[in-house]
Amino acid sequence: MSTQYPIKVAALYRFAHFENPSEYQPQIAERCELQGIKGTILLAHEGINGTIAGSPDAIDDVVAYLKSLPGCGDLDVKYSHALAMPFYRLKVRLKREIVTMGVDGIDPKREVGTYVQPEDWNALISDPDTVLIDTRNDYEVAIGTFEGAVDPRTKAFRDFPQWFRENRQNLSQGKTKFAMFCTGGIRCEKSTAFLKAEGIDDVFHLEGGILRYLETISEQDSKWQGECFVFDDRVSVKHGLELGSKQLCRACRHPISDDDKQSPLFKEGISCPACYHERSEEDRSRFAERQKQIALARKRGQRHIGATLHRD
Image 1 (cartoon, rainbow, N blue to C red):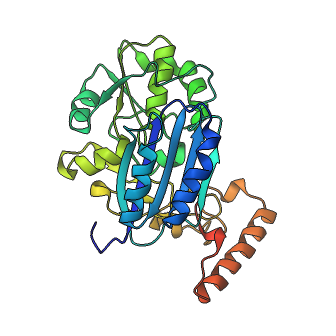
Image 2 (cartoon, rainbow, N blue to C red; image 1 turned 120 degrees about the vertical axis):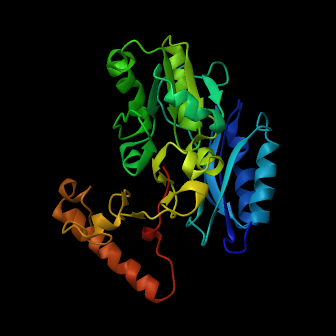
């Protein structure tokens, strides 16, 4: 890890069978706290999911520990870097699902689509027989996606099953292959399991997600357009996982560009073009007070909790 980037970031997940995930929660929290790790780790009966950050040695230690958990020897980990700690605190939470789809019986450990390596992804999505679907949320898709991808315009991943069932007929149009992708691989892996359960045979997903693709495929050979949203204070990354240009609206947590900041609807920490008409004057007054406290904390050389993006 270059000394230019003192913070190592690990996005990780693994579908595994945890009989009692609560028994691992205090152990993981203690290990992370001892190493000064911050970020979020989710635990459920179906496995583990999270993004954490810390010094390179600390991240390597915690990742090695997580790989020792039952069924996690092949933990999927994508590494990137940051100039400063992108998280405010550590959260190790118990959940019903490590990524919420809300459909009973979906189990990627039992049935899942075909994994496609980044080196083979371009050929698959260039095939005219392939339907390419972005499984991420609308605000993520807005700043970047693959050439030719279908945008479901979903607000949350739990909306994906209904969207697919309602649009399945129009999506196929005689095509037989379905390819899906997401940031790190967990949502598209669960999506392929869902499509298999819906009776679709030729289902594929990008192994390691967009992050591994951007890390592996050169910009000149890439079919990726734009930047990739990430759930921490970096906001977005580009090819080579270099830091992106996007910032964050602290009112709605959506990414904003320099053009957005020129809009009369943008006020730092209070509103942006994406959320201005969805908020009340009472909301904006509350956000204005929070922004005032953030500014005061910044003058004191402190970090205000309201300035940080938290992943739900």
